[in-house]
Length: 268
Image 1: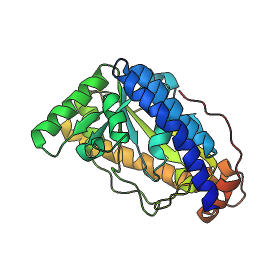
Image 2: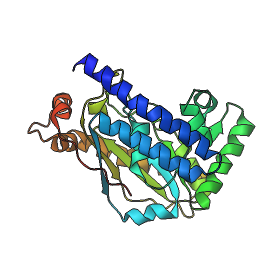
Image 3: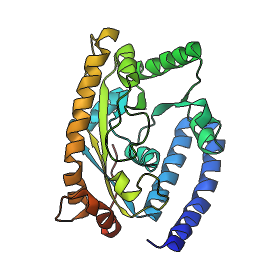
């Protein structure tokens, strides 16, 4: 892939995004919803410049998301995924992030303006913020958490953390598991180049946690792990189909991602 062309695309993308992000930061002082719309549009433009298309599949009625709950990312493979997350939903959602992220220029400011929940390493403060996230979900909001907590370096699923299960049980909110297919083919771990291609975000069947207690957290995590592993086994086939190639070998997904046509994004 031509490094010069990649640099041109990055310069083009940031020259458009930075003014939009500044507008979003100012607007966000008065309206988080309007800021969300601006930030979402900026991320959409970024994906379009690099030729990345986002498609969606739902195992249940997408309207289930309107009731709020905990969105659990079953995999995390690429730096593209935060950008894809903005493209995934028309509706505003929140997330939990650490203080180090909050201090990053622009990215941290965006998260702060959107009202994302900052967690420090102090136990009392962390517990208070998690209770805040639980209340947000109880009131019909959407909270995103990654089950892995970090990107996979080799494509395998990392061990899952219990945070999503604990938060879901604490809030007694539905769990909305999602799996992202194809993001690593477009931007692999450790690479700065973005290849054009199609990414599929699958919203799996929601899981009810009504009546579950803290003691059931391991059982809930086992269910999420089974779902994640089942989707992970499908991933080479799904990525191959998205890219229009005959072979199911994952080694060919990079080539396919370079040649796939762009399409329209449709979000819930």
